[in-house]
Image 1 (tube, rainbow, N blue to C red):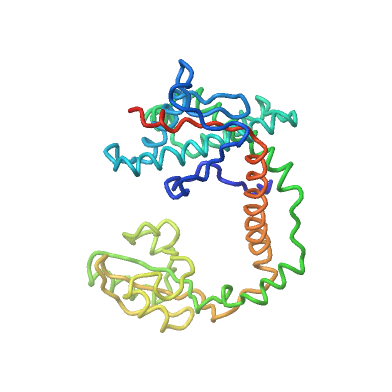
Image 2: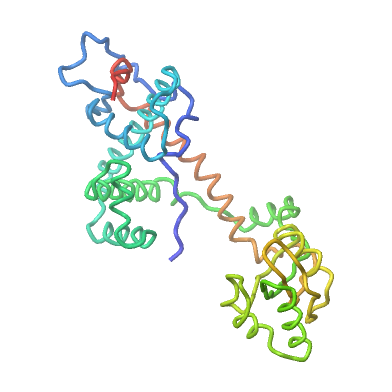
Length: 325
C-alpha cells in the first residue's frame, strides 16, 4: 500500500531551528523564578505540564542518539535546549488536538508498525540500539504510538485537503525538463581475476563462445560474480575511470581487452547501450506529484501549527533549562 508522505516533527538538525520560535501566550505571561512550582517545570501547554525531569530525560536521549558533545558552548547549549523544548511543545499541542478529535491508535495498528520497524534490525540488535540512547523497549513503543497518532491527525487535517491536479504536474514537467535529462548509459558485465595470464586465458574462452555469465560465476573475484558479473546500468563517472575508458567505447555484445585496475585484471562485455534522453512524463509524473504534494504539505502544516500556537496558553520556564542534566 502506498504510504502518504509525513511531516518529520523531531528533525535531526534541531539546532538549526531559530531561537525564539516558541510561542508564549499573552494570556499566560512567563513566570519569574519565584513563582515556579515546587516540582520544577519546563513548560505548561493549555494546563498540561512538561516537567523539567521529563524534558531532561528526553533531551538526554536526543543528545545520545545524535552523539552531540556534552561540553558544548553554554550559549549554544541553551539555544539547543530551547529549540528542543519548542519541538516538545509542538508535539504536545498536536497530541491535544488529536484527543479533541477523538483520534486513537489501536494495539493492532501499533503492532503492525513495530513489526515493520523491527525488519530493519538484525535479530537481537533492536534492544541494543535502544540501550545506547537510554530508552526502554516499552517507552520506544509508546513513542511510536505517539507518532502514529500525530500521523493520523496530519492525514485528517492536512493531507486530506491537499490535491495536486494533473495540469500542475504537466506544467512542472514542462518548466523543469532539464531535471529529467539522463546521460548516455551502458549495462555491462565483468570478470575480475588476480593475474593477467588468467584473464587472457578466460578471454580466449569467451572469444570462442563460452558463456560470459557462467565464467564470471566460476572465476570472478568480484562480489557481482553471483549475478554473472552484472554491473547493472551506469553513466560515465559512476564507475572507476578504467571501466569508463572501455565500456563506453565497445559495441554491444563485444568482449573487451584485458584491463588492469587496483582491483585486479578485468574483462568486460557490453550488454546494452542507452543513448542520452529525457525521461517521458509518464515515467516521472508520480515523482513530480509527490514533490508538489510534500512542498504544499509542509506549508499547510506550518501555517496550521502556527495557528494552534496562537490559540494556545503556553508558559515556559527558560531559567529551569539551565539546570545541569
